[in-house]
Image (tube, rainbow, N blue to C red; front, side):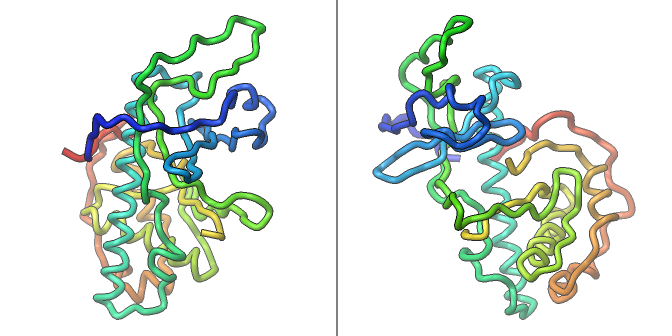
Length: 251
């Protein structure tokens, strides 16, 4: 991971916190997942999504640690997608979805930023919260298309193995199968979602979750074409369970 002390200006929609309770996108507030809020920002004349953890679940230090962990997981996910397509090329599988067009992770230009000035104080009880950010650290991601022409698709759940029937969904299920094999049964990726015009979770349930995935996954045509169905995992995986977010990054 590359660290920079360079100071740059990022614009964040004003008063986003005041619109969270409405529960729908409005004036810079874009939405929320299980653990994070998303706001609209602008950097280098381009719109971006600004993410921070929910305050009820995190302190400032936790927010920074979790955002860094999620960024690392995003890059790992793209690494395994690259190796998935490399496997396809080596196995002569030419009918996978178009690389970097139909299947890619939203990491191009993504980074973690930190405020150089002190955060505004929280409002008193009964006062409107006019702040844009509640923590000093924030994640910046490319803003995906939103609106009536785009629809979000959930390909798998946090604890549910994907069982998709269309070509794109089947390829994503095969990619999910590829990850534990390519990681030597050290990792799986779940809760895969995206939008059809273009919070994956980072909670780590350890080896039992990998074992359960391998037991529940049903190989499809892509798995078989890629030779994933012939891969045999070790007779037993460690029963070590890591509690909480995955906070092991790159050295």
